[in-house]
Length: 104
Ligand code: TYC
Image 1 (tube, helix red, strand yellow):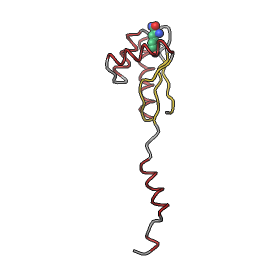
Image 2 (image 1 turned 60 degrees about the horizontal axis):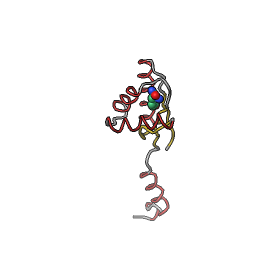
Image 3 (image 1 turned 45 degrees about the horizontal axis):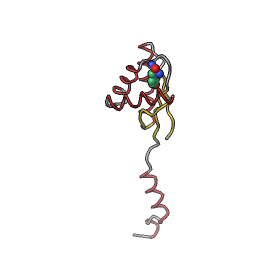
Image 4 (image 1 turned 60 degrees about the vertical axis):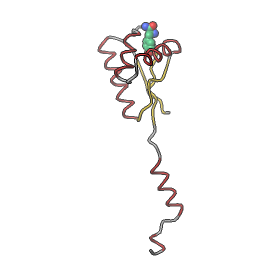
C-alpha cells in the first residue's frame, strides 16, 4: 500500500468519532393546568408514552405538584410526533393539556 492510500491517524480518529456520535435526544415535558383531569393525563402517559399505570400515576402526580415533569426522552422527530398526538387528543377531548420538548 502506498503512503497516500493510508489514512493519517488524525483522519482515522475523526471518522471514528463521527460514526459513534449519538443523535441528539429531546425530553418531552408535560405541563400542569387546572382543568385537565388526572385520569386523562394518566391515559395519555399510558397510551402515548407507553408507561405502566403505576409509573403514569407517579409522573402525573409529580407534574400536578411541581408544574412540569418528564414523560420520556426521544430522537427529535419521535418527540415532536408525541407532542402533536398529545395536543390533538387533548383538543379532541376538550382539555387544555400542553407539553413541549427540550434538548437534553
Ligand atoms: N392539575 C390537574 C388537576 O388537578 C391534573 C393535571 C396533572 C393536569 C398533570 C395536567 O399535566 C397535568 N385536575
